[in-house]
Length: 361
Image 1 (cartoon, rainbow, N blue to C red):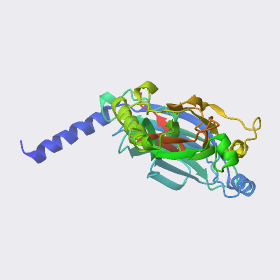
Image 2: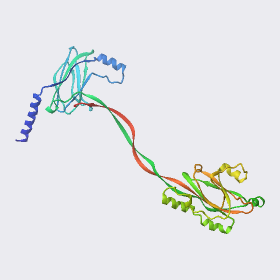
Image 3: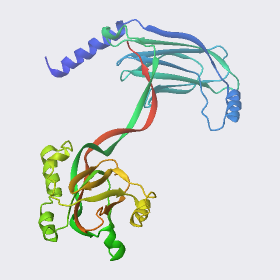
Image 4: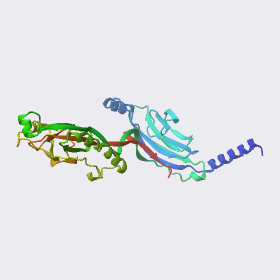
């Protein structure tokens, strides 16, 4: 069989099927169409708003044939009708001046919702009767449900935001004072021969300090000062311990204490107590006990709580009334370094609302 002959046969079969199908009534109802006088009055009260003409809304299957019958009780004046596809407002049928419609047929190009909107050219309201039927294109769509229900759908628009988030921390030693020595005179010598029996060493803590350490040693032997300073490896030992553990869980006994031969007192002070300490206004200055030590030859001191303020002082006192001493000190802070990763997340920008038709089920 030739292709054209085959196509003609198929079309003939489809045409025969459609002609053999009985029209299915979708609706038969009476409607009142507002006259132009009522429309004008409404628009006068509602400027910039569209008038809501009476309309009927139904869904149809692809290939359906719509049949429209329309009569007017009062024969004066003419009416208008527009049949539009929902969504794209494509007009599939329009008649701007009629009194009756008798079996008007409209081919449905695709499954969709169709809106039938009515108006009148007459001054007054018109009472009308409309009947809408359908002829299915196939037996499979015979029971197609033309009733339309409406579902509200919310559509959220997002934007992608990049944000740095802390995922972990690492710790880094920072030298505040390399090994240094001070000569602190005895009390009697300071009184009668000059010199100082009390000195202070400023401590400026960097941001994010979580703890800090100082090591110290005292001796009267000037020849031992350089040898003692060479044993002070606080920064190197803290660096090694942190690299090995990744944490600050090690104890202070893991650090090497420098050798000392004579006693000294070391006090942790703030700015308000520095001057009274130096002026020997005993009873008028106060210390932070966590970072203070008395009558020790040497030691390593860890300070955990005095980290929120940036400025402190170590007050060094020679408790001996007759002999001066050399005091050696090294100071190291432990600073927290945050480790960040860049993450992306969606942030809602706006929410729009859509009303979608449901039909055909």
